[in-house]
Length: 448
Image (cartoon, rainbow, N blue to C red; front, top):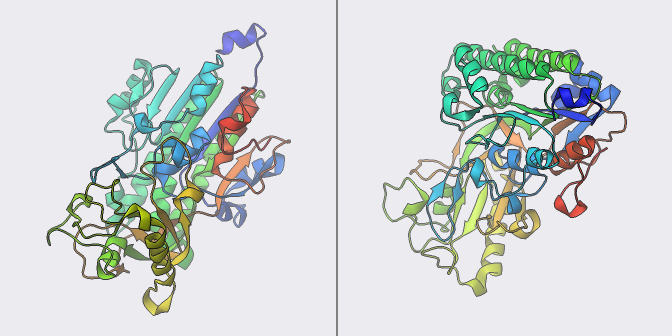
């Protein structure tokens, strides 16, 4: 339904959702001068901290945010997932998301949707008004639909995502400049199509904040050499959201939300190396570099971030844990994880979540048996290459994801953002659009 239909009297509510990968709510709440737009939205409607999901990894978060159901329904658990009945792994893309996206529910109701740069959406859907697939898309030319959008992106020399390798350099200057260019280009794209005013649902995602946080979080906390760059980046982000807000017609409700929080990273933690040293994991050879190299006597293995699987008979090709012993062996692994200590005796794991607590649905066959939620400072990696240590304090990243302290801002006086989580975003958007749905369609609920 375009602008012409509304002018003819078919006046339906509309929604613009701006997603931000990795914006912590406390960053906004503690510095309103850097975030005048988000602070103003919180005052006009509501804003607050929300919980993310388990595991709080971006590739799992975006499908949950855009469907309103847990990974057991979306079928996506992280950047790398395991094939059913195999040790082979794959990188989930848009077609691997098994649940219905919020924009598909909107279009089924006769509405027009523009979706730009949302991760885990490649290849672009051609049933939408326009779509640009986000992170992990191979190139702009194949990520955009229709041709008008593709032509604009080519002319603008558009960059899909930040080159994180630049953040590995000791001198972060080039990385900061690049991230800012990507941010500004993304904002120009969003503002262009917001001003077209021909959509009913607009969804756009800023992913640069996640990259900035990974590499500059330490500078932010410790007044490092790039602290001002960090704050200027976020001031620019808030200003861009302010421009979008001003451009929106009165019949559009603006919602801004993030996928997860952030905290200080002190150690990269290689979980498979730990499992190997603790007698849980065995490799077939010394040159192992993938999940397929685990040995027949392995009882457990890990995928990032903090996902632990038992090597179960009948499920894994070379499973050794009898199904009858599943509960006992899993309990032993939980006990070891809870007793795991890092340098200086600090506990590595805050809590361990069992699969049946976090995941339920038709696509939970590849769900991890356990997810370890780390204490701040310990970023749980998988790591299949041989390591000379479990804890690495010398990595280039200084920030890590958290389950707590994602952010949500709803520019609507009836909104209440309290005791909410990522699962509540999709039903909230549909409620604002007046799109009907059954309560059982979602694991979350509308906040309006």
